Amino acid sequence: METVLRSKSREVVIGPDQPTRIIGERINPTGKKLLAESLAKKDMSRIKRLAEEQVAAGAAILDVNVGAAGVNEVELLPMAVQAVMEVTDVPLCLDSANAQALRAALEVYEGKALINSVNGEEASLGRVLPLAREFGAAVIGLTMDERGIPKTAQERLEVAQKIVERAEAMGIPREDILIDCLALAVGADTTAGLVALEAIRLVRQALGVNMTLGVSNISFGLPDREEINEVFLAMALGCGVNAPIVNPAQACKTVLIADLLLGRDEYAMRYIRYCRAQKAASS
Ligand code: THG
Image 1: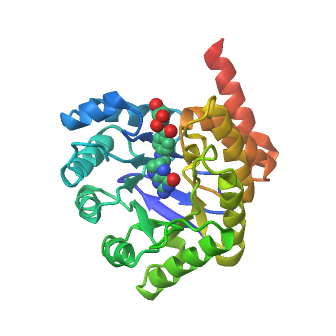
Image 2: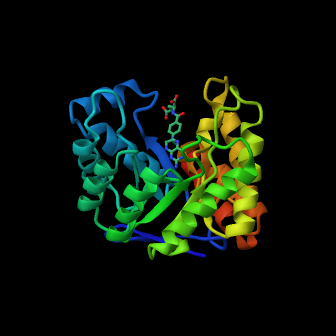
């Protein structure tokens, strides 16, 4: 089960026998006032810097989200995608709930993109899956539908199943679907972490698909968010997530250690190389 994404010059493979692929989350105006302001002015300099920093920190893929008050996503998402392609050559994850904005971004993107996202709602399936099909893109399926985000892992599996079936019926291969079992703020709902982890295990076992997760959502509203994110990331990787959406600067070492402990780093080569490079850079 391998999901292949492409930029103009690079190919990234997501799969159970591959190292964890980090999807960099930082091109997203949520909680970043300065980024939101520069986006409103169509100033792409901040986005370019965030792209370069995240690739240097170990991101294999970059999420591009421009959703903010006063922003026309149909115009800005393709502009942001162009700006990121000018400074990096990693595949992109096009993050919008607006199908028109997704189409506009897919039209300028060079390669095989990851669409973020479709969900189990009829309106979403009907608008987003045809885009994945038309552009030959991969797509993230969120385990939610008309009824909202299910409270139980079993119900989230059922939504994932529906998305996979509908995609396959349209000729989109299962390999091109990443399921996201949805991390919600654990400060607002005590069971948010547990239900997501259980759903990840169920989906992995029942559907065998590759999986992503917006890990940082888990810590919204709590102190010492980074530490919560790192612990939850390790747990999610242990349950089967193999392409998490995270801040690469914070997550990189956790990911290397998790891959080592999950048997994906022969002779600890990647871990040791990383530690040596860190040591050399700091001396
Ligand atoms: N699933 C999928 N896509 C997603 C999400 C998901 N895209 C958006 C989001 N959730 C994942 N991305 C982020 C990006 C930033 C933060 C959380 C999730 C975040 N930002 C800090 C804040 O808001 O305070 C700012 C931190 C910074 O300066 O970098 O927490 O679940 N498929």
